Image 1 (cartoon, one colour):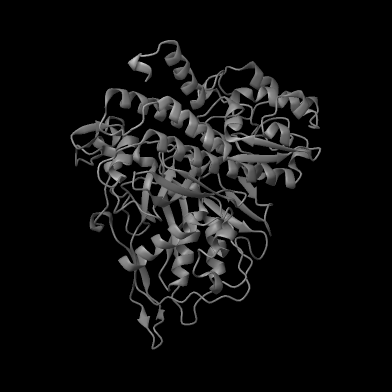
Image 2 (image 1 turned 30 degrees about the vertical axis):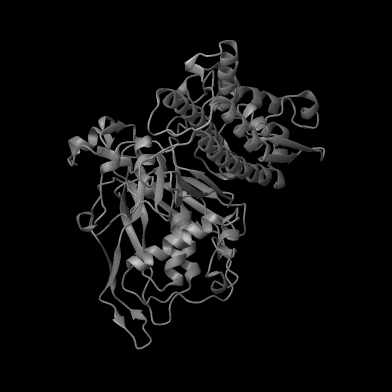
Length: 574
């Protein structure tokens, strides 16, 4: 049995994951997710969510996404939330898994809507050490719904129960699951602008969940996520969300329609009694397994699903890779990318990632974790664990940052080549693409400055480009000084770091793990510094890799500029 004590905000909660694979929880205090003052009771007045309700929910999520809020509680207290005056003095807490459930339940509460949720899952087959990372996915084994009562219920009790019951394992179910008793809360939708909208959920097989909060006209899907320290970050959908076998349920998800059946309506409109029924997959208009089987077949047999790697995605007669297809089909009209705007958009998203990382690092420093002696070995898996490491470390966040940087570099390289070939999906009207890209990069970098305070109280300002330059030096280890957390290597900057020889050795040994951008949740990583140093250093060794991929888009652009200056007139470098 593995226990998780939530020590960071307010009264603690212990989540327990049993070796059998079922997750239950014990509340260690009266409240965990919220600290409640008088707030309106949750009375159900509607039998089902109408399209108007779904549209209202999308608008609610979109408004929060656009707000200048950076933790869960601030977002729900912000002017962007039209219901903020109706929840009393309640304080809200969520990690990435709880976040979509919190938003959905909150909106249901404020609008008298029914709400039900799965509160127990087991591995689909066999035994698993951690239900969040089962190879064959999970199945629902118990469910709960908000009771329809005459006087309503205390909504806080639902938020507490959700906080205890939900993990990323709750999303890891077969995309075709269709049990009508123990139904899944979500289903796989068609990939188009009508289905993928604010409020849509995206599940990453590596243990992360985000909400879509906006779809841009150019097809970019913007996302919103919460983290164990209660912070909120914004990014966009891309290759950091891996495609996998549909039995693991990765990708886009929509809330399954439910209906309160058999309830009695009182004179004041309150519904009492009844039970929840769910709409089966075949009755949902936009249910589709296309994100797994591709666009060129309607075959959703087990054989077809098992061949998900061979899925083909075609738009307007052109075969695209999956991520390009999503971007193209989500764009208004035909997708046309302007390279300079593309690099600006990606830089702004990266800036948000770095800003969110700063919150996480600051939380560890504020709580004195850097002063704690490091354990003798790493957690069993640094990307998915419990305790101090879960709350204050940043290996997953840092890996996603590096993945986003690599995606940016690869994308810009591809756009340059597409422009050279005259592709119709690229539109550049200038006469110096490389120079314009470098200028845009530098402008966005200068506009994104992160300031951290050294251990001696002296501030250090880092542009986004400077963060990129030290990205493989950024320590994810919460027990290390803030200088290490921000990748200091210059002796003058490191002079204020109080880490001793033991932590210095940890930092050097963790270099191989910092080089790794792939999050490997299913390998043992509980090693000592000596074991990390000894290797082998390869992807599934649990000890990291010898070299990280090139993520420096500015360096790449500068090399092209230098080549052009050395060979003026070469069309390959225009």
